[in-house]
Image 1 (cartoon, rainbow, N blue to C red):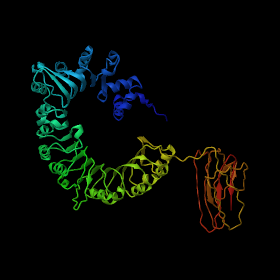
Image 2 (tube, one colour):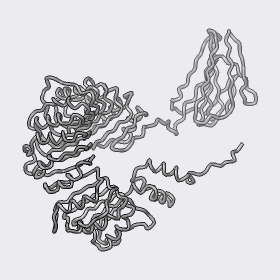
Image 3 (spheres, rainbow, N blue to C red):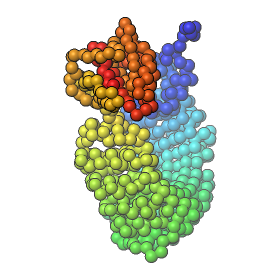
Image 4 (cartoon, rainbow, N blue to C red):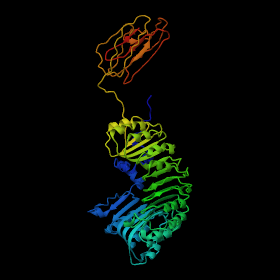
Length: 602
């Protein structure tokens, strides 16, 4: 009975369903989907405009009037402006003012920014939550002294100004400008000189996230600021370019006091353009007892270091050492069971690497640069490892043998400059690990698609990704031009003698055109591509008008009842076995071909 309600085609789905689908798509692919039809275009740019940014890059355009290709009925929420000035060309400021009402994010990348122009624009952005200002020169005057409305919606501010061209007091400018942004909680700041610290000092009591790049002339002044509610700190301290490999220019004690002033800090990303020393490392470890994520990067080392003191970080879960440190031999190792993720890129000996890993017995994620036989110590030091990322020059069979011992791995990433094809085939033993679900390989070597697919076929439940592209497992398909071999008709055996006949279905020899028939057998009408193989014991069947009927034979205590159904079997094998009781057995093998064929043995 047919259903009265016909299924609606996919293009008539409700808009809510389409929006749910579009939310799962990446932004580059979402832009491609907007070009499919007008309906999708209107849905994407009406409900998902927060995923796109409108760019005005007027400095690199020969005809700037043609660069602004806005759609009149479309709403834009993110705007990035790259020009010499905000009001040059003249129509640019008017265009930005038209978009200001709906803007959520505004990024200004200018050569020269006038204070008066900025004051005219900002009060129009009533919905803006993120403001980014980058300028080569900032021209200040006394216009900011006039009372302006507050931008209470702005929560994130990025401020990078290299030089000030001021006809008025810089302090007065900062005070007036900051009064327009009273609720900023996330600040990204580049501090070139001590005078730039006024912005940070004003916002320090309410800042929760700070990303600061501090030049050498302002480091000591910066370390005097206290951030009581700061939760995330991304700090880069720069040395002079000709001295960045020398000793630090700031005191470790002052740096420790600055860190202890951030009493609510949870994430610390610290980068130094100077040499590390044991005093600086110990100060960092002892000053951050409640930090959950710590990353050290950017420095060099000329002496060996110890990680003693790190055990005071009771809440540490994620540790990254992206700096060239030389570790000394540890006499006493204090384990840190809270650490679950560790990343390392230093040159380290295998025995020292084992000592470092013994500090983290509950490690689940490990990433490091491999320079020797570091893998041989992983299985013993961190038995709970689930995610491993290795950066190595070339793959060797010994490395693969060590990886086979990591039975608990769920994700494996290998970045290798060179992988030989013979060694790539050895990855079959790695991808077959019982718990492995993701296997990522990045290499400069050219790996043929058939080799990669054969490796992926060894474990279809594991996703193999080669250089960012998912590899499809190879499928075994019988060649269509080769037919299977026909069975040979067996002669009638003697009484009380068991004869068994078997046919190999994968035999690829050319079948015979002749057909044979014996008494008690029926014929089947099938196509040449269909196959039906039936074997049973001591069956008595009779054929009438080309049809098979049921039969029961009782001979020497042997009996079987087999029913054969007429019809064609498409691309499948049907095997029915019926065995009787008794000592004597007889096998019947039926395999249809282009002609009706049946062979029996009794």
